[in-house]
Image 1 (tube, rainbow, N blue to C red):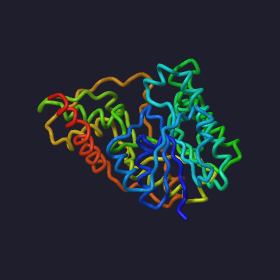
Image 2 (cartoon, rainbow, N blue to C red):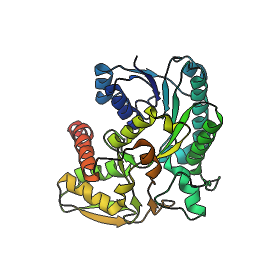
Image 3 (tube, one colour):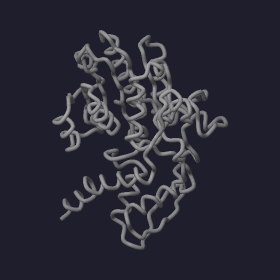
Length: 331
């Protein structure tokens, strides 16, 4: 009998790609989303038509609605959350309260399942930000690093704090869990408010010979293509070794400077463009990369998609589904 999987935030970036990965592997997948960020686009419609995937509109803050979901899920993947820099800066109180309340409702649902093997919770690499600010942080960063919060009066602390609280809730919930800390996952359908789609958009609209605006060009990040990320998540859901574990999710070997990243974006665009270097935004860490040794040791798997190949796939998707559509709309 096929395993039943519930994915909250299922219409979002990681949710969609994970649903597709699991459905192809034979899982029966149930998605819930409130469409605050996720979208019922053509890709998701095709997924719903071709595979054993359902999609239900649910507000995860509505405890009764959450508890009225099924009671026969084998796995619950909780990706739903208030995210995004604008939300964090404009609504910090709601970020803390709503993110923890949504998780509390999902934990209550998990406790009602007759045979739950796992609740997987998506935390964030932002949990390391306080340690980076106040102490010497090893980079690449292992999961064993002691966590420290940033200034509690700073709005940006709200998201990190909501995820640290979420991790603590699961540690005490007395249900089988796995916690992941994603690092710079990218790919088709990720939304525009991220460095790779932003740079690809700049390149698409730029005139030959002009320069792209690049903030913090010397800062470094390690990027992980979405297919590699959901492949690792799928392996986690199948491995008992991951129960009770907190694991980084990313691609340690892909670390490079933002300038080098933009140069790849320019290459895949096929245009002759330059780079205009600008200062970093306040609070942006100079370097961020996950130590993936623990994850790769447990899963016996490592990322396969090279950065230029992943960015090219992302470029092709955005060009077809977003940029060229915008051009047609303007005509």
